[in-house]
Amino acid sequence: MKKEKTIPQPKSKLLLFVVVLFSGFFFLYYPYLQNYSTTPKWIFGATFGLLMYFFGRKEKLQWSPGMSVWFAFILLFWIQSFWSYNFWDAIVRTVPFILAPILVLLLRREENDLNNFYLKIATAIGILILPLVLMTLVEIIALYFSGSYSHLSTYSFKYSFGHRNQYSELLVLIIPILTLGYFLNDSKLKKWIFVLSIVSIYLTVLLLQNRAAFLVMFGVYPILFSLYWIQKFNAKNRIRITWTVLLLIPLGGILLFSPLRSKIPFLQNLLETKFGSGNERLHIWKNSLDLWKESPLFGKGSGDWKIEILRTPLEYTQAEGGTVFFQRTHNDFIQVAVENGALGLLLFLLFFGIGIYLLLKSQFDRSKQLLLLGGVIGYILLSNFSFPIEKIELLVLLFLFLLPGLSLLKMKTKNFKYGAIGIVVLLIFSLGLSLKWITYEIKYFLYKKDNDQLAFSEIDKTKYTIDPTSTPLNWQEGNEMFNEKNFKAALSKYEQALEYNPYHVHVINNIGSCYYALGNIAEAENQYKKALSFNPKFTESIMNYTSLEFNRGNIDGALNLILTIPEQNEPQNYRMYVLAIAKAKYHEMMNKYDEPLFESELLETIHDDDFLFSVSRGARISGECYEVELRNQLAKMTVK
Image (cartoon, rainbow, N blue to C red):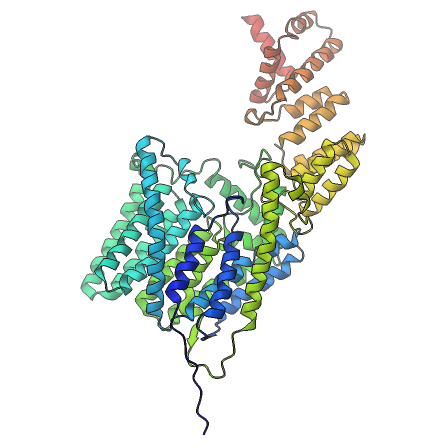
């Protein structure tokens, strides 16, 4: 009888792999790319994944239904990319979806025992993150004592994570891993290091004032961690702990919602929903749900939320002035629903449902399952207020939380082959796509930073079609031609840009300006009206349409348009335009009315630019037309 041949396994390199991998995810930063760009981390992750694959242990991994659902979601996302406005832009977004589970599976095969696996993970993460957290605390405390600490100033604490919100989310999702490490460790010294890390993270996230992270730290974690403790004690102590938690949670709520909150610096802004924050999210979510209703089953197409949202009325947001174009809903579930429809949302939710079920059904100790479950629920909560799905380091943490149920290690595999070709193909695909994408990003930001026309010309604009503000690159080309007064060529470029973003008001506005310059006034008017139908407060189109109306003699139409611009959005040439139109209106009224007293007042004030402009301000406040406001102000002057 032939004896089975066992394959000797090399010593585990898990600790080394974890240190290198998370060092890259925590500290890798490429300063010439925009804050949210994670392409350098994708390149690093794909490269290191290949190294782990070829130089790590050779255990085979048993697939799970949860992992199958996740890759079904990726497949659906790929398929729906084919009807997106920007195919490659959509495909690129799947890179972190692919890398995160593969990297976690490759780490998993390095250690057979789950307790040792999580202990090494927690130790490495704790050692890496503690210096960064302590440095952050020192800098924030220095800000506080210098009198510069504020909600706004904390945005500067972003490091390689976009801005302070992404940094806070990373820190808060590390807590379950560190807590697990604390309970798995027998060394008192190491336990104190874990305690120091957790306390430092709590203090740092509080001072960074991230509301979603606050809800996780003081809502989700206390409940789940108390359940962990309850598993460890006898019935009498369990009752005590339960009552303590039940008492602390309402006391915390009372503090948060009471006037005392205003006395504590890091709590002052947590419940505000002013312009630029919670208020924006509410409007964006409402508009997003309206978009979902239009294509409820299959959605608008992968990556198309940022395009489609522009045609909804984004009132009371930073998008009103046409200076900000939102890239994300700040709610992953809503964004998936809009882009991939009910089918995509079902797969997304099914992944979490099956993942949690398998986690709780796994052989891992129940109390430790609860700690990992706290991480999963924390991730889900953050997904309702932010966009962790595109952050590679946060996705890796999610798969670490779900790992006991997502894959089991298959020991002593017979007829071992040198790895699954699919993993290598996906890693190489992710690496190649990320390398190509970063070359476009670098060239684009060189162009934006130094007006490097050569770098801009080297970008393949059929692949890197839109920039990080959702503005098509063909629009930039059109602007160059427009400035050279080559209006026909500019129009062609703007029309190409429109294919990649048909609701971008800058593109539509410039198409109108091309038609205007070419003498097609009717079509120019159509384009200005179209831009204003998507964004009624877009200043550039209002000014251009005002100029059109003024030049064709419609003085009242020009005034009615220009007076819709809010005071805070006035462009530099606003006063000049208002005065020119107001004086034309004066002459029109002199010719129209036979009112000697009124005519005399007009003659007295026509050269008083400050008065003419004050009438325009008054009209905007009162809501009256310019003539009515003028008569009212003249009447007040007469009474005085």
